[in-house]
Image (tube, rainbow over the protein chains, first blue to last red):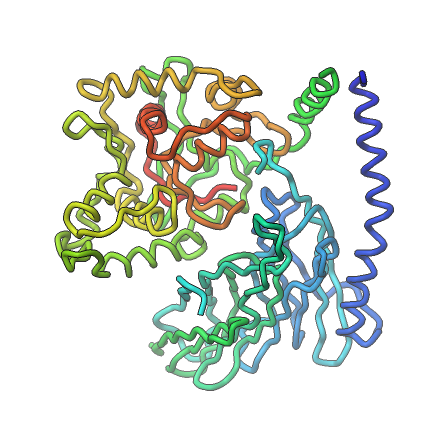
Length: 140
Length: 109
Length: 278
């Protein structure tokens, strides 16, 4: 079988598009479910919450993530493209110095990392960041 | 008890009363996700640190619920208010029931 | 057959897709001490003008992990080695600390290794195991297992900031020659030598990975990929598997010779042990 580079690329991107179509809604709904479990279906307000993540992660095994939401009582992190989306929930106590935290997380592939903050007034705020997870040239 | 588990914490030695300080913590732990298979194709059972807490003189600073998506050797950075001299207490809760604890004193000056 | 070639061609074209490394001129400063991450190439590395640390080629997030010993996850293993240092093991009832007053006395050692002792080329791992088997009556540690890499990291970090300075003449010359030959010899199904990536193509992208010069001044290194310390020989093994070659044995004569040659290509760079890489 002979393939030109163009054909190979076409096949490649076709497969990718199919994977994306098949994969995304399923993962998105898992994340939606996890978020709904936290919010009881309350409206999610954009803004008032920041998420800091690398645009490109050199390795999905250790991706630094920071979240901050002044006035939050807790902030939960979800990885929408992981087999199970829940990552961690920071609950802030009376001696918390700021409603923020950082950690290092695993991302199975390129995806959106979602942060949901539960605020003191009972409302919920959301932010997300897309992280490209690269596959090293050396099987990395 | 998982082998070779060792906590590290970074807390300033001194602060002014009411200061907000940055704390960094790391514990050596493999954080086995429960999704990997071994060489024979059997699922490697989940074994993670599932909760981390930081308290100061008995009052909570932060309480983190941890899922398998947190990386090996889990790292947390956060801020705390120091109202008085005293001791921070840190605890990591292992799936196997073990609780790893360490403390760090801070002076006011 | 045609398909294999096509796929390889596509992979090579992908080489230019992404640039993830941090800005030019970033400095590696740890605890207020600036490390040398670029130096004029030594005369014996005749095909390059400048030698450069692998740190330069990493993303700013990976780089930042090495700027603070608390952020650097390798130090959990250094801490474990500090405990191990005082632990009695073997038939003689001795610990490292029974003979060595302080691990700090090893400052400078890492810069000179591997070296020739009594006609044999020895790496830090050999020195550790010699102590264990000859003086402690203990079992030797495996070359790349956790206890060994933790201990070589603890001993190595004592030399952090000091320039690599291995001897390549005299007794060392035949080992160095052998290492150089290995460096330029194509092997494996992909028929590649170390030099094809790390001399001819460093600072380019191999798919999504930014190729470095393959310097070993930061080993053992904590890799994000496997979240542990990796010996230089384990990394050589990984490279060889990637080019689909049968890897030499860790601690064997080929990798030891290669370790000496690679160390010599980094003469003048600071020891960065334990570094952080992807």
